[in-house]
Length: 246
Image 1 (cartoon, rainbow, N blue to C red):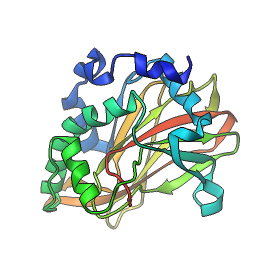
Image 2 (cartoon, one colour):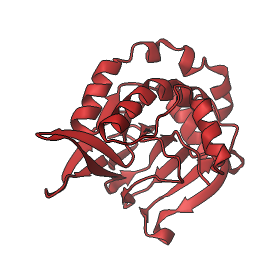
Image 3 (cartoon, helix red, strand yellow):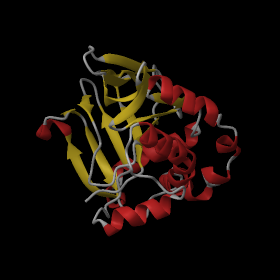
Image 4 (cartoon, rainbow, N blue to C red):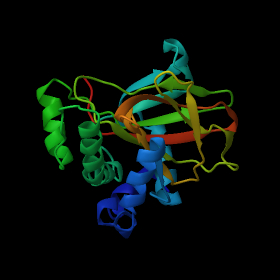
């Protein structure tokens, strides 16, 4: 499917796929392990169309080669505004329910920051602080490529959850390249979570830290995410970050 057809599809915010999300399960999974999976958030046609955009440099504001910065191997590109559909529809549609989880987490961790339930109101907050550059990105991995464990923190205003959507079909387009999340709890060894995704599936996960219930109340744990080594083929992923960057 050529990239131009993205604009011809109904936006995900009007699609029954978002209406059928079990947000109680998403919240429970995030509370339990710091991540949760949306099944078939995008169709295979939408995934192929988004992957094809990688060749169109006019869509992007910058290209990052990971090896030059010690980030791993592979590369990614940050989109320009205006964002292409369905990203422009998915970003605010997912933000609304996730903002309730983010506010609950901040309250549990004793963090005073609260997020509006409308993403455009949150982006105004970012832009007033000089964070005006869009952060949704496409990532491309070839054989031997990987993404080191990291956190996507771009300025003072950080939304504590983000989403990664697998655009390629594992086992057909590529092998290896699993999404990995690590969690460091105080005075304990790190815990790793490997998330299996199919084409069109998405994982939502904590950007920086999250609350964990202990015997004396909630405490913060630190999280990082990355991608294991791709063994064969090419892997494309869409990253949906809800705060903008300086």
